[in-house]
Length: 135
Image (cartoon, rainbow, N blue to C red; front, side):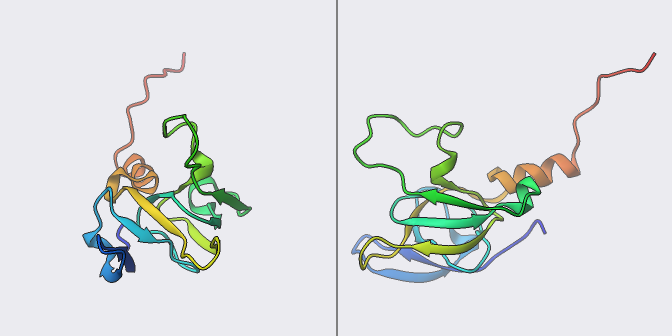
């Protein structure tokens, strides 16, 4: 459950894509959002939209619609306010919807134990001390 790897398409500087292993991803890479599989990292959606199942994180098996981050916005990206533009690691992508002929692209935000799924597993393995006492 903690270690997951798959093959992803990475965008190169010359606008071509190359297939690599997900263990080689670093924050800042631009990848194709894979349809029909689990995400290996946290991704900010740059183009298109996606429908994901976040049951592994929330426990609710309700599909969630995610849209791409707006390019014309004056707001800065923040973790707390931009959940509708973020695809979390460990969630499964049910469907992607590209705009025109272009693929659905995403920017790698976090990898490994720094992802949302990684912090959940870290909390299970190393729980915080409870400071509540019964009288």
